[in-house]
Amino acid sequence: MGIGERLKEARVEQNMSLESLQETTKIQKRYLEAIEQENFKILPGTFYARAFIKEYAAAVGLDPNGILEEYQEDLPQSEETNAAQYAHIQRSRKDERPRKTPSIFSFFPTVIVVLLIIGIIFVVWYFYQGSVGEDNTEPATTQEDNEVIRDSGNGSQEEEQADENAAEDEENTSQSENSDEAGNASEQPEPEFVVEEEGAGEAPESTLTLENASSNTKATITASGESWLEVENGEGESLESTMITAENSPIEVDLSEADRVWFKVGNAPVIDISIDGISLEYPVDAEEEVFQKIWVNINQADE
Figure 1 (tube, one colour):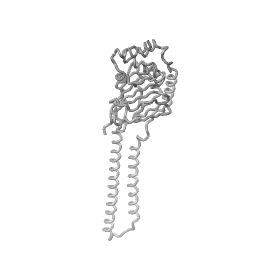
Figure 2 (cartoon, rainbow, N blue to C red):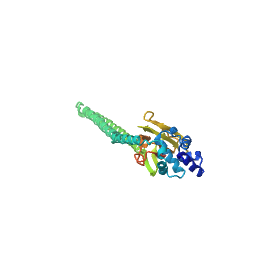
Figure 3 (cartoon, rainbow, N blue to C red):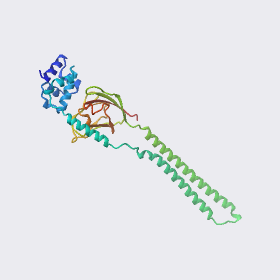
Figure 4 (spheres, helix red, strand yellow):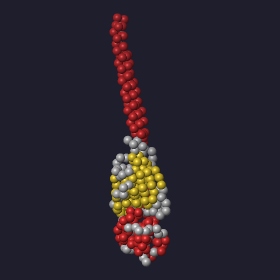
């Protein structure tokens, strides 16, 4: 009995249809039929043939590793060498990533406020010096002109006082506006991933939450090699299902209408996933388990 007939017999014993098996494993029906017919050429590649067979076996109650060992000679050759190369490429890319440094733009609001204060002080000083210079150049007057002199002096003081009051009002207004801008900027939290559940075992299934997501959330998937990729929303609707390579990446997926999204990655070491510009780190080491499933809950920031 071949491996395809063995798996089909186990499925029938479990009273499972191909449609229900597809729902359980997230493997397309045509691939499940190809496995039962041992027509492995239809599958995306030899690596996926072994991965899909393990998923099939686990879903119908068989030991995945035992099945692979028993029918080792009937299966396509494994692509372990390519997987190791992809893992080496991924490690090199991680080593080359520049470390994040604090952004100088975070200091801009403080610098602007300081410059405004200095400018206001300079303007007040300039008008004050001009007023003093005019007072010093006035011609001498006789005692008979005392009343005129007193009137002129009071007028100058009133103008000077008005200028100072206007400068103080301008300074207070500028400080208030900059304080509001700085407050609004600091109140907007940055999006971040939180690990809710870390998967374990064969083809681990993990759960993460993206806090403070934007209202126009989108995912960007970049590949340095070849991998199978599936993306669905929380209702099971397919958002992307393709073989992604370095040539056809990056791929962008609109998640603005989804509050939960599901990723299935066939060769995790060659795939980078980012949502709202934040890189998704695999909860399970991608070099140990290259076939991964990840749920991501999306929580938008309060406006």
